[in-house]
Length: 421
Image (cartoon, rainbow, N blue to C red; front, top):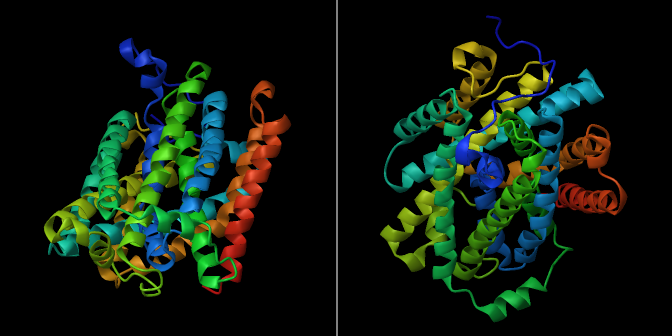
């Protein structure tokens, strides 16, 4: 049987049966999973550093980014359902090979940065418990390969969601911090936009929200599950719930960090996951705090590594003109399996042989902010031309999407370029 044949028709998976045919049951997964992956180790470090350096001043931004995150990912859901094609496949078919190559380059850069931060997080959690990275990294890589190459998207999705739910531990950290509401309100209204360091973290927080591999992953996952128009409303709900949870996790980390340290006390950069743990969890006690933080950080790292790796493998295959779905056995889709395995293994090896890379986390988010114009531009244009006429962006909602996306991209790029960070 030919391997990885070029794609010529939309995805068509067997329809779910029985109780799985209920709309929300059928669609549940991609939206929540991609949002859990959005709050990865780099995002957590960025939120923690924001709270340590600027108190609650960046808390309003976390909440304002909820509709931004929803708008972007809802467009991916819409494209996946009504075209039944992945993001990379649409870019190639609508815009041609040049834009496919440009998009592939951005996806590779963003995924490489993500994997470095995720495996750095795994190594850092291991350090908290005295386990060397020579043990934690191979174990993490083996687990990720087992999850991604099982031949079942649904098993991979469920395993990733269970792992990602450990991030909810950060709500306990924020609750234990017991922030003062007077300080929260006062600092939330005091925005030092003239400070380059503040603008740099604004860019980093924006870059932590909209990631290229998230767009590729969710659209391909929706198409891979074979969702149809009858699932659209439920899929939007799945995405909305995920967007709220993602940004509340970020807000929880920021609140805990701000409540722990007076603004300005933190160094210019957090040196390790261990340093962040010590800063965030003194009020929980050493053992409890280390366990709670460790579970949250490990869940964030692993679920983001799964989603970013699958997003890269899916995206590159589609951009190159080949389709693969997780329901296929790995030996029937060797190209996809090889890309997934290589990026997971390379990420683990890079962190294993290099110095501590956690300090790169904020920088990776700023890099993502610089990619926003391309990511959002392609996504919005696809929503204007690739969808059936009745589902295309138009009217007041088109102008709303353009305004929100334009302001977000402008703030991210301006913050990155003018901060001197």
